[in-house]
Length: 210
Ligand code: CO
Image (cartoon, rainbow, N blue to C red):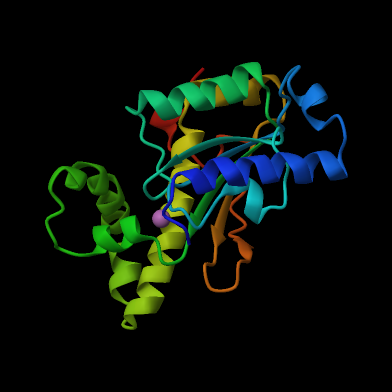
């Protein structure tokens, strides 16, 4: 892989050429407006780019990424993205996509001091505490790590359900649907965790808004 900054600009020119070869007028339409139907909350990991791994084109997925695909309710950046996606773009689906081998999740399983990063990792450590019994019972470390990645995605789906303006959308209609997926770096395939939801039914009563 090139470490030359120029390679990105050159790559961009090549990309435009390829796109226009297959779809003349591609940018004319897309520059007018975006109407994505999906919001993607994924990991910042360079190996898990939303549009590439889903074979989707620019314009189809609104994206928010951070370390270990977390939904943190004091994260104004994330909440602004979710608000815009849900209330303005009216996306039909929100996908939380984690990935096996996630460095953030792995760091949260251990006891190493990561300095400033510890504060972010605490949110992931909280997920471990919630599922400590199940996770500690898995003796094989790789399997425990894989399961922790899955449970972390599941908890972020749950955290999205707690968001008041998402609940407001559900009171008025059926969307957005929230999904939990995990991507495998080893074979490039996405696993659906089958935790999809579009209601606040499974939430504890203190989280539900009138
Ligand atoms: Co990651």
